[in-house]
Length: 402
Image 1 (tube, rainbow, N blue to C red):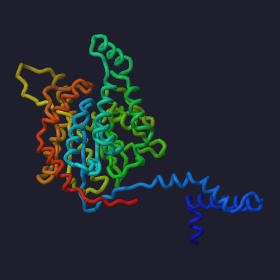
Image 2 (image 1 turned 135 degrees about the vertical axis):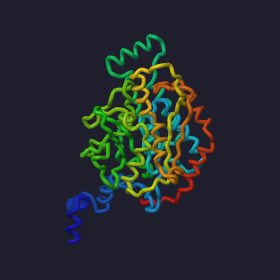
Image 3 (image 1 turned 180 degrees about the vertical axis):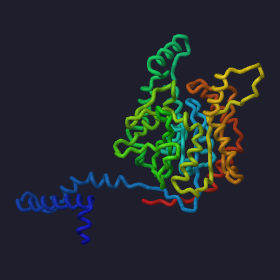
Image 4 (image 1 turned 60 degrees about the vertical axis):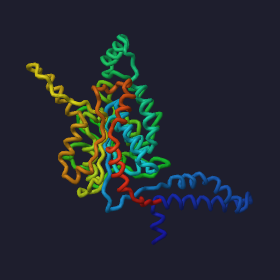
């Protein structure tokens, strides 16, 4: 019965077939006097060495979260070229953490638009923060390159009218393909320890909300959840890394939508202005409803200090509508509202890192990259120290399974 059960298993049946072919070849060679037993064994070992090497190389190390441990989540706002700000904060945090890698101290990372790119690079691919920052700046300068002359602006206008986008998405796609290759988001990352779960936000043409993840979660997402996980039935239809990055960064006006599994997707910032909200929702679904966030970190891309408007008579309705729409897309306001809804203890574990900008910065303004990095250094050191201390106080020896 035991041998029958082993033989009926698909993997065991495949191995048994190889063993059978091995002995058939051995007996035929010995019978014909072509070669002796040791020679046949040596030949077969050489033939099948590649299979054994592949099996050995696919062993992986997985971090298992203790049942008594809380969750450490991070949400990174979007903002096009303003994405250098969260990367600046991450660089400062990494200095304070020393040899403790930031991605090893986060259980769930969510990102919108440029924040989604950062989540992929740091928490999925596990690149060093310095590499993430260098790649991001190079990508921003390449994709948002245009002339500020009258002819350059006219060219951008013509491109927008004819293609529904100010910039050519081919430059972005080629760069993402080159960086992330044709690997799947929902798959194994070579030479890494699997641990951090990541989620990227995106929207469809009908403004429906979607997320792309490298996990499934312990409980399925309810139909009334307000968003959907992109998880095709066929594994070969799973989004590639570059497609996921392209979907979360397809900002309307700037880039055309991207098609994945027959559906067109746009920038996730239209539906998830503050991805830290998504992080709290997904944490309760991944683990359980009683999960407590021990540390909640929200990284912004710069806030412009608002002043009271000067009363100059009646304001136009379109102006008020536009202001309301921009407030809705403001990740800082959404993050603040979320914190206000927490209890006193949870507020102590909630950290928001953001800069104060002297004036608004466009999503495609690469000339202000240095200014944005300088604004990070003006952030009070106490804020960064509090975040690093909170992460370090919760770090424990990971349980590893090989």
